[in-house]
Length: 252
Image 1 (tube, helix red, strand yellow):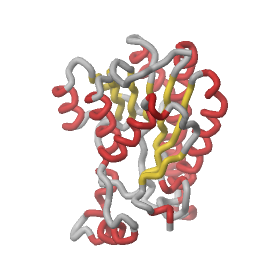
Image 2 (tube, one colour):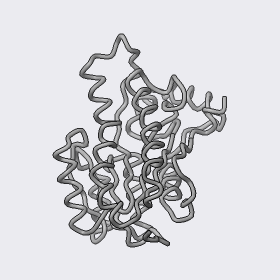
Image 3 (spheres, helix red, strand yellow):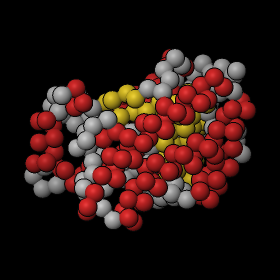
Image 4 (cartoon, one colour):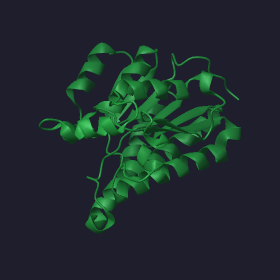
């Protein structure tokens, strides 16, 4: 079984790189010396800044993670440099807290395809090469909505619960062959995806902070730091875990 002692030089694939947690993950792994492939539906000023700051080690790839053909092309581009060492499945969308009766089939499918099916497709695209080299780390983005109700609507909560189950089974099936898979479960993180809570006088954001035992929102860099630890050799004995980073939300 191949051994890794550092993040430096490893090939990292992160989805949802254009903003928020995905962008923070890409930057942190780049700072650690990794070769990072960042995938997203569209570029952004933050992606352009990563390209300027790390011209030799950051590669942006346009990819709609809902589509198997685009994922195949994405992984083929990464594999041209060598197998993926670390897969960060971070891309995701919200569902406006819609309850079941207010969720259309199209909305359900879009959330499931983006948040859940994309992880299945990406893992299956990367796993053969990971298994061949005897090493691979997967960090999937779950949510407190994967642990309790109220963190999203019907589709989002269902998808995040499924991500946790899929990650546990993924690790169970392949841990003995050098694969390690874990989940991160963020709570209130100040990202563009949650900017509606800060609209106007920010009353919703204030209420969320007040309901969080830590009395604040977290920054995406905090989630990136947890992701880095879970992907690092220091976390080698952590398997199939769900690690909340929620300011104590789920302890209530």
